[in-house]
Image (cartoon, rainbow, N blue to C red; front, side):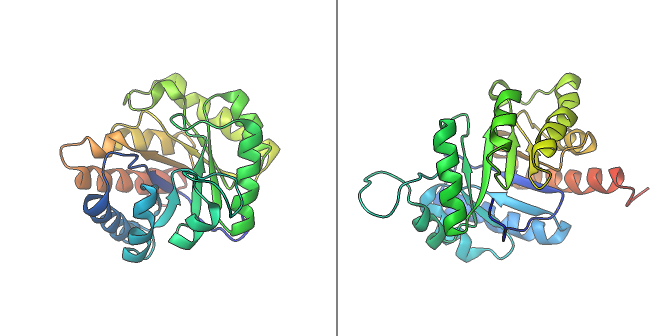
Length: 238
């Protein structure tokens, strides 16, 4: 866990994956930066590696995370992602163990240690309760709980929502300093509102935003829902 990493609650994560890149993703990042400031919601943005630097240069408040990195030290390693290079490019964190880029538990542990060493926050994905327990014991800054079968589906049930508290309790019993982000199956602002209202500290979306008729409008609607749900849950608004 990087002790210098700060993030306010609630927060939101946008995962462009490989849907957009270059000018398109920089434009979305700039918009995300604006609404992050407007609604006072910290936003994690995970672009392609080659887009980290221009996005970090073009934004002020956005928290730019790498989609992955490796645990190697500087030296040989063609085709790998060096932690020092990720940091130098302007990222403040890294996402690890996504369902589309899974890692072994020993490799997750090594990579979190390298992230800590170079000053990158770690956000580690966990797809089930066994992984939640195991990942929490490795002390990432953020645990991203998302069942692989829900990714990209846009469907969440009441049963899925009830698991939020169980996951939170499991993580915080092990380490109360870990932030917990619940995602997958987030189709629109109503899903966002339900997630936060049911106890999530954060949520996020990829296809719900990028496949929307107007991705910018959908992103802002999701951020507004995050803000409203959190404030209502914590009695900041009537």
